[in-house]
Length: 463
Image 1: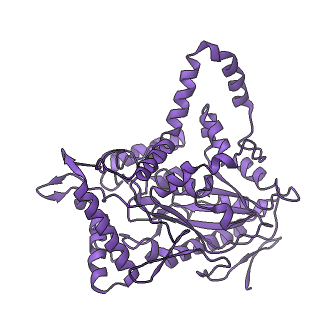
Image 2: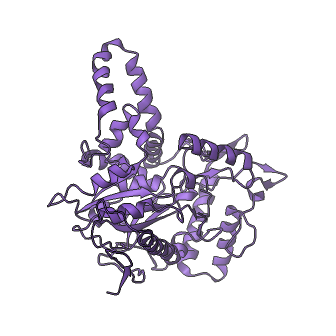
């Protein structure tokens, strides 16, 4: 296998071979009864849940307000996400490949069926009364996850209102203030039982979300998985890496993966314990180093992996349906950690993550965008001006839309050995980072037509 050498006092070797679709372990495919074409899936007998009709903004003189919001498409012209979907459908009926044509036609058929079944009131489309129970359960699972931080912090305050609970709460709060469970790398409190509960299958089936494997991850290595894009809430990352709903343990046997989040989340009573039980850990440097240096047969971190949402909160402000704008060019901290710990870098691209919500565009609402950037700089988090669907309607609410999310795990970029406390040179960091960016671009070029057929622009790395 050809190798590329990073210049430096202690050279680090990384793989530099083209990304290919083949894998040593093929993902099960689902036959399309209409034309025999196959689509990636885990069970050929499982029907993909329907998606609700695409959100339609209120209309004025018969013209949707959303359709007036311009988005640049791949040819440089101006077009909305909904218009791009309609144009793609028209083009497919004329001369597109059978697989894409049948996929878009089936989406349109389901759109028409649910539109007929829905009833309108005040311009809002409400879900029909007779909805399959499994779809109601899927909605409930997503609602629970979306509201979990509110539910658990509220439960803490209700517990505080009960004086009989104070003898328990006081030691608990002392423990919370001194605990290092989120950063010590021991993965204490992690529960595979909770990670495998049926609720997470329902959660993943809501969109639906699917995990796609392109290469093996040998269990004698350690890994840093970079997840792109952040989206609004990173539902795809939770489905694939915080739960066993998408079969990560089966596709990558011997790998213990931990999704990482902000350290401030582990200061929230009760919610902190929920995250620890789900195997989520802090994204701090200390946490990454400890997690990747412990565990495995020799207690050296072999078989351990962490997943980092590289773009962070800043990238969430760029999440617009039909687009993929990444904050990656200036993000090199994860590359430094890979060199220090000897962990291989694995790019992960989630097609459809940005399609789950609508939010105000920074181009049309610059004042809102400046306020969000201010909050990000001061408080290290921001609040996207988002909206989605509701629990019982298709147009108003904070629930994500039912749109497919395809999480593709790419080829690992190998790092030969850990550097420890030795500081890697800037040349080594830049070289490895450039190889990583190249692999992200290859993932996009390879799978964009399969998993993002109605995109309105190509992937852009903006900073």
